[in-house]
Amino acid sequence: MDRVGKLASQKAVVIFSKSSCCMCHAIKRLFYEQGVSPAIYELDEDSRGKEMEWALMRLGCNPSVPAVFIGGKFVGSANTVMTLQLNCSLKKLLKEAGAIWL
Image 1: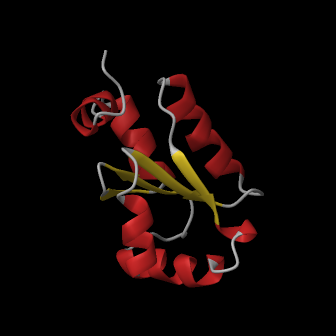
Image 2: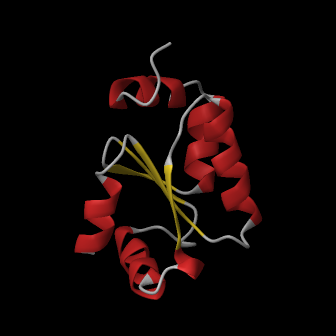
């Protein structure tokens, strides 16, 4: 849990992902299209990935990926991020976190 929290606070936007997950790919693409350069941690390519996956599940992320943190705070997974995008709240969060300026 400590590792997830530490990694999540290192950049304005952090995404915990799996390289084979299509929803993870869609969420990463969404952030790239917003002009955000998130830190991405591929759990299936990390030696401690399983441990981090369990920590994410304990935070309430089910499924465990994609797990998105903005400004060091857990935002949610794909459904939450897409809802924020559709109701125009995502851009505000990104601005507040310093991930985008416009």
